[in-house]
Image (cartoon, rainbow, N blue to C red):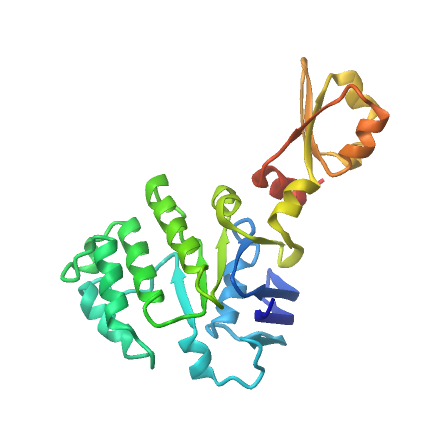
Length: 283
């Protein structure tokens, strides 16, 4: 499987934060979930990928071609950002005219098809759009110039479930085209659990996991038992310990060993949110 994006040893230092030696790859025909808490470094890395911020060190190879020109890179990347970066006083079509002029392979028919599909009015002022409508408009622009890599930074934050599902369906449809890929940055784990193929977890400016989503979900389990059982366990093997007078629950990747030692313990599958919190828990 070809790498659409390869990031090698990229760092960026601020006064109170450091993006530290990032090494990740984004594969073709894959939705990669980029998961991290607010302030973990997701947006900083995305800005570096898009050329909106200078990196201090490291290399980025786009579309498996280290000699690709900046204009060609820009043509092949579609972007959906949480804050939009639109001129609120313009209509949708006026803003489209500005955006389309920056791409060499703009597809007006595809844009019009998305506008109709999302039930948007091209004559409407951008300032009058709801958050969900703005996100649909941003996606219409991002998918109308034959982009091979779609980068989305917190696209579903603050959206209602119906609109989020609609966007997820669009992404699943897009990724079926040969050579297309999505980098989906969010802290909403339920969206990634629904559609992601790969998961990258960043915490305090460091990549702590890059893994197949299904493999990650198999790595951890929720365990339950009475408090006497809890006292027999090594707390270093547990995360998100929840203890009450009736018993305890916890997340662990040592569930097989624990089951052998304590056969009566209850083991259940867990979700991506609990795994993410377990991996980023401060102990």
